[in-house]
Length: 386
Image 1 (cartoon, helix red, strand yellow):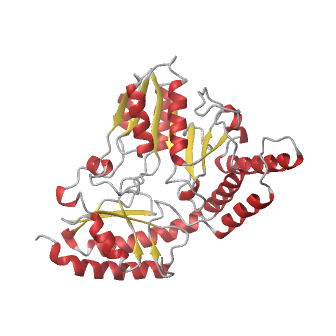
Image 2 (spheres, helix red, strand yellow):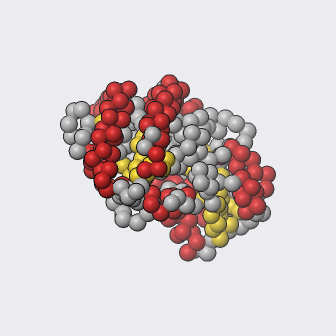
Image 3 (cartoon, helix red, strand yellow):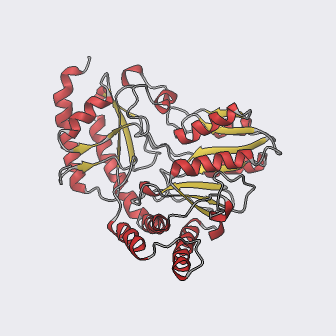
């Protein structure tokens, strides 16, 4: 990878910050003992672990005992969905989610369907936002779990999670799980409000931390079926030796993300508007999937009658890295389930491109990207159908 590569795929993963890498290295080198050990070195490791847990708890406005360290967003989502559903069958077996969730949520509820749970899916409108009225009509007395992402990973749509929480809590005893992998550190989210999520999933590598680190945090103590059994670590909810360096690095990345969130959001919104203005100038050759009401760090658009892989490769030749709509499905040939849910024109379904901003992106990168995008569209212009 060349030094001057412009990386605009931060929703897939981010480059760790130097401060985060330094914290990770120090803990690995000096505090490598098992935090469950009772000797002095183990006690030191456990103290670091508890400090990291308290820092995350402070950010989310909950108690340290309600913060569970995991290996990332997928495990956090799986743990929440399976744990909450299977432990609350005495209340009912109805589960609600949306049709545009991340596969780690959709595949989990599909598994629960096979186990006999009654699963329903809320639809998204053309802007990728679910209807609160549909939620109101579908939540039931026997609803035990609602899982809804805060920001969609493919096109940045923001779901009304706080309004949804009020409906859910007024109409049922269901637990409300929010996948905040794409929103934490970009939008305000915590347990500070009277109404809000009951549990939140976070991924370290989406906020300039490390892959293999994540958090599942709770508003309060909840009825729970452990997902991983063994030595009883993480309050008995997730057994296995805790990765202290990952936990410390994640807590540092989380703190930096929240402290710098407002300044970064302003930059991201400016870049978003600049690029959208350029895209609109191409006329009906381009369809913009993202909306101004969505998250500023994700911008998805589509090129008419052109596969996404073609434009990605053309940009990559010029040292610009972007992705198709989702990194999780970019190697698959079928159209993304999110794109299908948005009901966009058939001419645009195969050409969806996602650009996503991060802390290492500069104004110069955006200027260069806009120039390169012009060059690429000129190069590929002959492939468009009139």
